[in-house]
Image 1: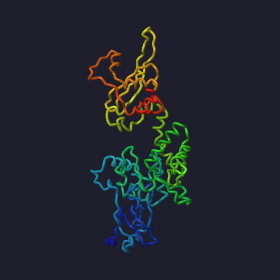
Image 2 (image 1 turned 45 degrees about the vertical axis):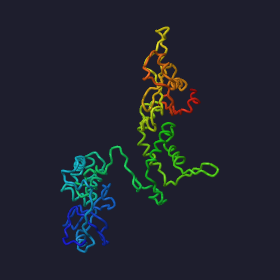
Image 3 (image 1 turned 180 degrees about the vertical axis):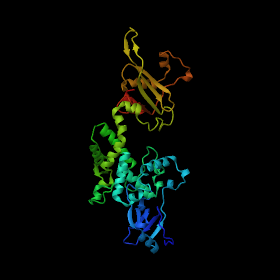
Image 4 (image 1 turned 30 degrees about the horizontal axis):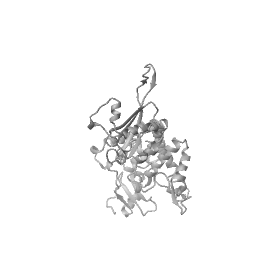
Length: 420
């Protein structure tokens, strides 16, 4: 684009091409010293205009050469997009974004004051010294100030310090991966060993497998992190083929098609606090009281008697002998069976033996038989309409905490497995 007025203003963006004496690309004007024929430009990354740069310093060029380029047409002013929050009027900017801007501005304001700014952009040695002195006064790292200055120059002024909260995800929500590999490039790519070793972003399935392996191998079995990763790589993330003879063959996937050791360490560190709690409260206590409930007991049932649930609880009372009331005989264990659909209690048994499936058979017998004789034996008399007759169920589930593993018993196997 040919321009008619050749005035270069601070924070203008210029596109430079076609002159060997000038750098090529998009640049933002950060300072001009017309008397010294000097113009200071900050190079913009056109592929990541919306992202704050991590570093960068102004470069010096000839003011007259830029004016000549504007006249010749190989330099032209352009408009570049800015994050939405930086285009909003002051009254509409969210308070959180303004708080971020104001706190950042307080850190670099002395560096970009009128008395310090010319030396900051024109003299590299003085710039390093000024940043070091300011960082020491604030008791912070110099690179943090360099990052703020790069944002100040990249976006064109104080607006570049606004917080970009609109580009952040919800608290605790993992960012969705795109097609581009996240993180730094592999070292092998940088040294030219193999340009195909790019790697992959961890998928939700990969993250689930990492958590499972971390829990079962590192927490429960005491494996090292590296050994757990080798197990995941060699035994889990493999392609399985079944030969003609029925033999299962595992084929390792290429190294650049599976998650790396660094990714495994990263996600294990995310899970570690929760896994450490599981380690400290391992076993029945975690499963019974602290584990996440990801579903409902009613899932997959269709009506009353479709599924029963059984659990045993040690009652918080002590029983005494009927022959000598000064003698304690122990705490009773109460077995309850309820219908999952209606929550109706269908079976009951009280025993002195510890929780076990052998004793649970008596509660199951109670659930599957008529209750008239049972209620009469314990001195209760309900109207006939309120009494529950024997019922049969499709499946029986026990509560966690009484055994090491969950057990499901179908109605067809009750006689065989539990001898009911």
